[in-house]
Amino acid sequence: MDEEHTDTRITGDMLERYLDKRVRLVVKVVEVRPQSAVVCTSDGHHIDVALAEDVKLTSKIVEINGIAKGPRFVRMTSVYQMGDDEDLLVIADATVRLMHKETFSSMFGREYGPQSK
Image 1: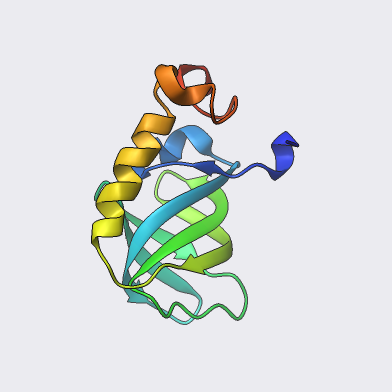
Image 2 (image 1 turned 135 degrees about the horizontal axis):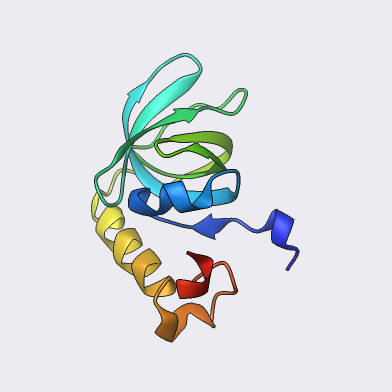
């Protein structure tokens, strides 16, 4: 897969390690503003998201795809509405952490595991 088109699934505490890279985060929508939103990541960090043009956040739980622009800021490129079941946050957090463990990282690509840090 072309590295420049790869979105790495991360948690909020990993965001700073992926500055200027494409990322995916499963989050809970906390507040929606006209051109941005405040969200809570699967591991409890509040981050600001610059919304992509014409995006409407209709679910409580969404997957944000975008570019990490700061330790607590993402510029959204797209979004996947995931519904309102907050248990998804627990599942997403555990899954992403496993994906980044050395034991499993070879299954997901070089963006994951200790070598990605």
